[in-house]
Amino acid sequence: MREQEEPRVVVIGGGTGMPVLLRGLKDYPISLSAIVTVADDGGSSGRLRSEMAIPAPGDIRKVIAAMSDAEPMILDLFEHRFTNGNGLSGHSLGNLLLAAMSTITGDFYRGMKEISRVLNVKGRIYPIANQSMYLHAEMEDGSIISGESNIPKAKKKIKRVFLRPEHIEPLPEAIEAIQKADLVVIAPGSLYTSILPNIIVPEIGKSLQMTKGKVVYVCNVMTQDGETNDYSASDHVQAIHDHVGASCIHSIVVHNAPISADIQKLYEQENAAPVAYDVEKLLEMGVEIVEGDIVDASQQALRHDTGKIAKLLYSLI
Image 1 (tube, rainbow, N blue to C red):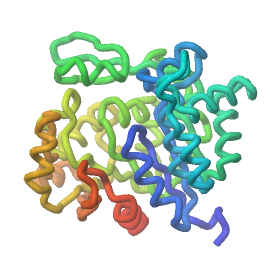
Image 2 (image 1 turned 90 degrees about the vertical axis):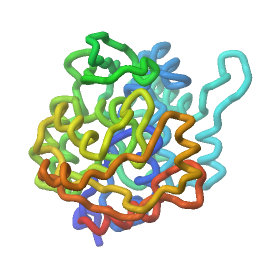
Image 3 (image 1 turned 120 degrees about the vertical axis):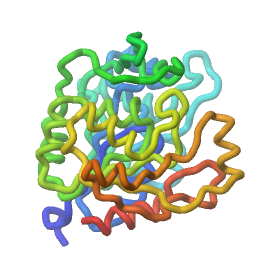
């Protein structure tokens, strides 16, 4: 089947949840695109962003590794993080390569495409913007917290998040990918600091509302301290509606198998709990519910299972 005849699938997000989906989806007969946040301001990413005035490369690096068909040793090298060395400590080699290629090509997106080509990436990757952007949160008490990494540390209830500069110019290719998609997947991840920074870009949010494809949100399995304390599945959806509009999500994917007491006890130390799956509220919101056992039971930490979630998402096309 030629690529133009294959179903078009777009995944939007960042953080650790997005690569899990992409790793499984890349092996299906689909035309796959990933739209990735570049608002990270912590660690290696944040340092390179401020020192070199480029979009934060960390989430892009993880997505390149997930979608690559390169040899495992090459990917291990790409993901390698230096633990010592004056100036090198804390940096990952992939972040440095993205920064170097941005300098060589004179453009972050072009540099990223070159590295994707070298690492044999299956599909297309689009940074949400080809410029530096900064995430801010207005809290329920009226205070403003600046910086993606600082928002959950504030331990306050979040009212809304917004970006600076005010006008973020998304890549036209990213807009076109959403508009032409058969399936748009909003990946699991930190709701306010990995997911919403992508879809609050006005042109992206508008494209989500206007796309003819199905828009599916893969809900987090556990709450996150400092972001979604006590949030149910419908609270996650409501936050997206409040930022983007009520017609932007057609379906929600939820985990429906029990979570062991031992794992719940482990997460209690992080002040996290299972996301309550409130069926009636979700149905009232007009959202189709897609449920399944989508967690990797072999891991101590709760993670979506690459194979299970990819199979479920492919079945929705």
